Image (cartoon, rainbow, N blue to C red; front, top):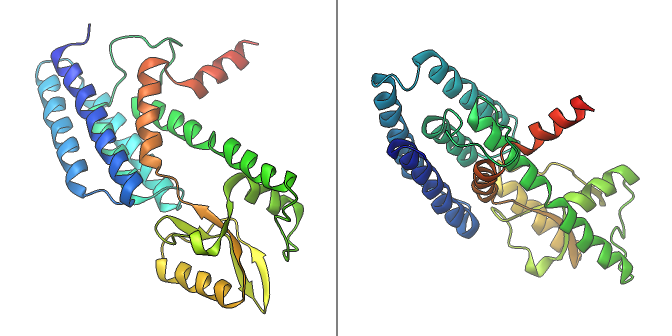
Length: 253
């Protein structure tokens, strides 16, 4: 059975991510107070466990530092947003080590936030399958998905996995939808990584596409990745580290 302190860690982590997920889905914005409260509680609980001899200071500091640094690098590269970085920073303080109970698969990383991260990425990546299915169903209905676009096949394939073709009138724009195509010299071309830093630029591109008389465009609907982090934590607690479990199975032959 988890101790009272461990149960508190889990409850705060799940509650923090659940609240953040709801806000992320609705508005794509989460107040910093959510992470500050969660991180502060984690810091207090860590101090409590260090003073009682339940955590050793150096492994604790290593777990928090490595997990936070990895999240910062990924955010710096633009692969997820600032709120996602703050979520992992707070989580590294709340759950620096694996829980005392064993998950069903029996495999977790000693740096527990990395287990949550790998499962979160897996949950997010799995969304590409329904996106691809939706796009293929459109093609089966006779829709020319890439009408007027002469990009190479591999670029179109990646867009099929990550983007949606929407009527311009239903495109919500930033921070929910970002264009995956631009006008250059009067011609359209696909882009694989829309810039999430400048909403003004995204609105400008959408305005140009509308003025060009287009009725439908390819867009990237931003993922509420905090929802996948919450799912990743739930999966980590129940099953363990799924990608790491696969790696171990492959190594064992």
